[in-house]
Amino acid sequence: MATTGHDTRLLPGSTLRSLPIALLRARESIMSRFRPMLAAHGLTEQQWRVIRILDEHGSLDASHLARLAFILSPSLTRILAFLEREGMIHSTTDPHDRRRTLLGLTPQGVAKIGAVAPDSARIYRLIEERFGHDRTEALLDLLNELAEQAD
Amino acid sequence: MATTGHDTRLLPGSTLRSLPIALLRARESIMSRFRPMLAAHGLTEQQWRVIRILDEHGSLDASHLARLAFILSPSLTRILAFLEREGMIHSTTDPHDRRRTLLGLTPQGVAKIGAVAPDSARIYRLIEERFGHDRTEALLDLLNELAEQAD
DNA sequence: TGCTTCTATTTAACCTGTTAAGTATCATAA
DNA sequence: TTATGATACTTAACAGGTTAAATAGAAGCA
Image (cartoon, rainbow over all chains, first blue to last red; front, top):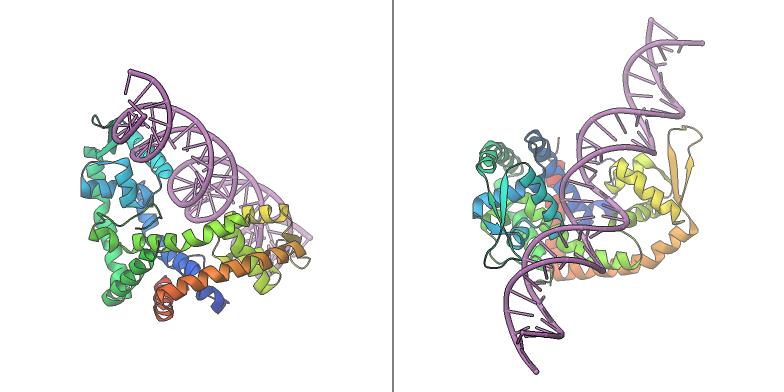
């Protein structure tokens, strides 16, 4: 039986065939594996996403970072305050446009990436192995196509 | 171009091929259509889910309702307090097990369902038409299979 | 230059998600 | 029958999502 707190007994077809709920369930089933690992490293899912993107892209301004991480700017403001308080990032005002904030990883931030990345990769690999590489690819394609329907 | 606030320019493959982020994006693209309509009716997504499930199933206790709506009990407590304050539901203590709370729709709750359901169905139909019935079904199957991977 | 209009970010207010702890009630067994 | 443990729900504390408004700086133009 599932250990997620949500089993599938008595679930009517109408719920299982609802796109919003199906997306919610699927995301929850994925994140329930990542969340405890991230919590053990003292990070939330979003905090991890932010420092990982800073690691992949180097320094970025807040707007660009928000777009890449799919985090709205009010949330990003709070997340950046936390990460700076913890010494994982540094922020400076862009001298060429003083409205902009430039963000970058500190050495401690880089070290955190190095500590978390292997655990993250291991979980991801496990999920993909169990679900199947082809089905994972097919699912990613459908999800991205659905997201692009937006206009 | 998209009007969701998140366009796809400069998105690296690593982000688009991440299951957690792809699920997040897809869900956001769906909910961005429902949310304004629900807000116009004075409801959040979760409040709507709760009264809709009460409508489909008749009276339920809180635990069962939480499972069906995929809402954790602390969130449900707050949602039920709101819905009762607004007069859409009534709650009574189960006389056979006084730990349990039995919930049901009031006539006003039923009226709200009648007001929102057509709008909801219209949006859902539009999404499914644009994305395609077969692809929608395929996506639902993959999402539910992924969710069931949990153990 | 001075005024208006964007743009980037923050603040505020409210709701939900998540985890842990607390309270009330039920069920079981010594 | 009463102590023990399980179950149903609530409370608390903190983080993020969403919307609207506020602030500050940049850009364009009369």
